[in-house]
Length: 340
Image (cartoon, rainbow, N blue to C red; front, side, top):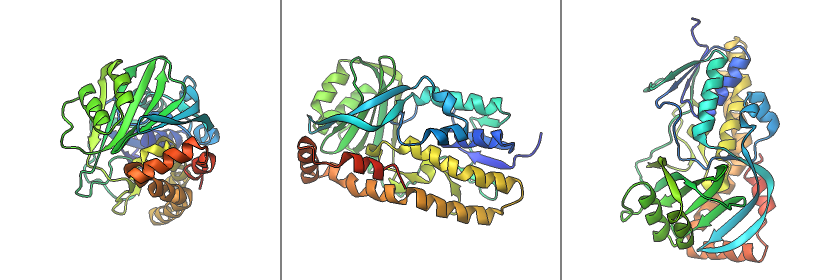
């Protein structure tokens, strides 16, 4: 077997989509993934913002054919619905449990070398791309919680904001709703699974959402939690990174999955040139750094500017009032979180 031109550490959305793109262009690729497919992950489980042309170039558009299309958004602040309107652009809802398995199958079908249950350790050097791991800077400020619930009647994407966190709802298949939230870690939050999710919702004033989820059946196997990470630009340690290993945008933006795909799309042609001998690894790293800055800098700054408002009483009050009065520039904010 030919030695890989490129090795990708991490077989999630970013790593597998990059692997598929490279294989379609004849580059030998190895992807190592610590977990096994299928698996649940803490994720909003909808794609909103990335252009169809990007998905087509990557070779993954056809894998989203049966994704649910959402066209409305609803916001609750402190248990009050303050906004209901059309999304500026549609969102595709699909379970990561399903999507990652499809991506893995497509990658292998194209001749990619997929190694599951394998940790790469401190692998570094030329030809190695990191698509795994978030920065852990010693603090444990955030916890992400996610699970699938059997629910009917959801009409679009929902966002619920409380005094110490927020949770979004997205239908990912008929009657199956992904509930994914980000919260400030609370030492009083006890339990596991549904009990823990409800505890965080109630502790942060999201009582109506807690009652809805309490009355719904939860897929116990779908529960996932992650903590100890930092939002924003990640610590790269000189590595070439994609997806969450590059930037971890605050989840309220709804742009995390799109950014993972876009970063893979940016890097793919550079890796093709590297594998063909037309570009050195040093030059690739420099060009990719410039291009990611141009692509993501504005949306990361915008997301991080607004994020603290969700965790401050005056900020939430202002967001609520502006939303009720239809003065919040949703379309402009939506664009700034999705365009260079």
